Image (cartoon, rainbow, N blue to C red; front, top):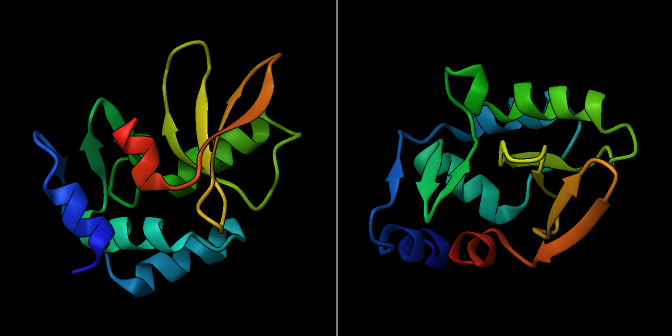
Length: 129
């Protein structure tokens, strides 16, 4: 088990679903034309979807509301200036705040009329904030 997964599992009150296969993850990357970060791939593979510390990290599941493909596609249409290599990891559902990640693992926040800003260097740092 990776250090990221072990640390997430040790967070109190963490909730998650069943992980998905690497094949399903590859298909999602192909559909979105992105490469997921290593830590996000580990989360998808082990948890599918992750609820932790008030964050609802979207992933790959049956619900469109929590599916990275559906949400990223939707948010790209609403955020035309966003880097096309980024994908959504969370919709805050407050003031249209959206949390994105890039292949390197960096986490960014966007909000209409405010652009984007980097808020964490990794998924683990983000969920622990």
